[in-house]
Image (tube, rainbow, N blue to C red; front, side):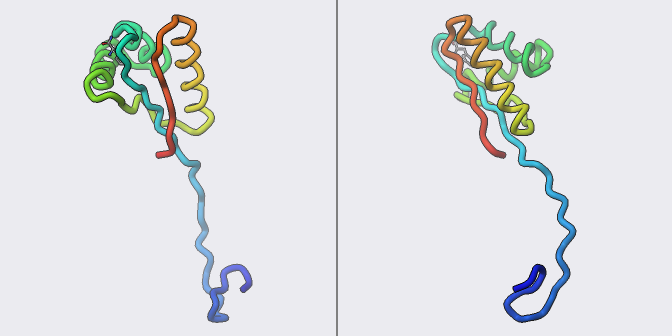
Length: 102
Ligand code: NFA
C-alpha cells in the first residue's frame, strides 16, 4: 500500500508526528566499599546537586541498592556514565553507574 493507505485501499490522513528523542535514566548502584562522602561528591560534581540533595540520594542508593540520579538524552547520559566510571576508577572505588532507556 502507498504511504497513508491501509489494506482497504482507503487513503487516510498521516498524523504529523513530531518525534521526541528517547530519554535515558542514569542509575547509580550501591556497593560495600565506596565511601559515602565520595558518592556525595560525585552527585554534586556530575549531577549538579546541592549537598543536602546529594546526601539524600546517596542514602537512597545505600538503602535501596539503586537510584535514578538523572534523566538525559542518549549522548549526555553516556557522557555522565563515562565521567562517573572514570572518576571512580581513578580513585580506586568500585562505584558503578549505568544507563537505561526510560
Ligand atoms: N554502601 C556504601 C558504604 O556503606 C556507600 C555507597 C552509597 C556506595 C551509594 C555506593 C553508592 N560505604
